Image 1 (cartoon, rainbow, N blue to C red):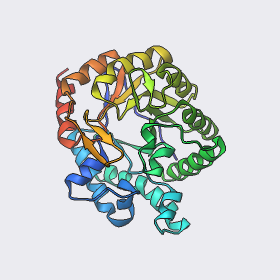
Image 2 (cartoon, rainbow, N blue to C red):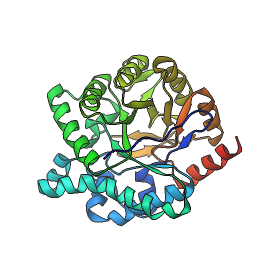
Image 3 (spheres, helix red, strand yellow):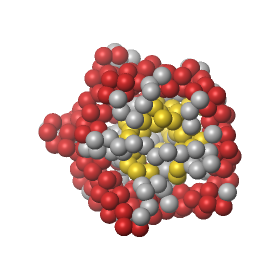
Image 4 (cartoon, rainbow, N blue to C red):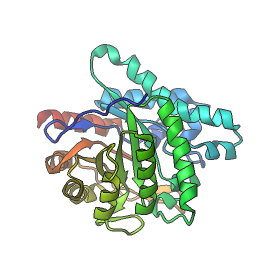
Length: 302
């Protein structure tokens, strides 16, 4: 059963984790294939567990499962049969739950968010940064619903519907959330006030907030400099708390399949996001446990 999400406010924000892929790379793991971090659900699940443990110990109250790019079709394309593919999707949740329970003796409350990434992530061609996949609404619905049902069966505390680049895909996801009644935060990949597909971000936020079970709306995997205005817009548009976890400021080159540019994640920005209405804050790609630890220290002094 899905549990209740953490209560949070700008007076008491909840700290999220950072990126999974960069933390695995720092541990010497190769995540360059089409399955990305999901490969390790099959080949080295203990490495994923170690990353969850590192983020919890850095001060994160929520870790996000390694299911962003995990799907039954993706695993089957890699030669896994359907039953095993379904088991691996569920394993993403149980790994995080086991680590959470392992650390429970310290009395600190922690949560597990099951990552629901966009359809484009499974294509492994960078289209999650563009949206507009040229596929039917029915295909998107079937893809997302079957995966969300598998994740929910494994018992996360809630879903993290994240890095959504396209309002039209968001409409499908919101429809499924309403069908299943699953609590979730909903975050877009965005920049300059628009989704990656070019739609006004205010309209996209309104779509996300149309599901009663969505308890926070915001952005992730965007540049840190885009967060503040997005948080303000999310709060003004939806009347709900915002969620914000940008990447390091580096940019993903989908052609060369590598990050370029310099990091621009300033820990000092986080209290400003919180003041603007971000109740759930953390990092995404290229933001690791040391940075999350620094954010925890900074929030503790506010």
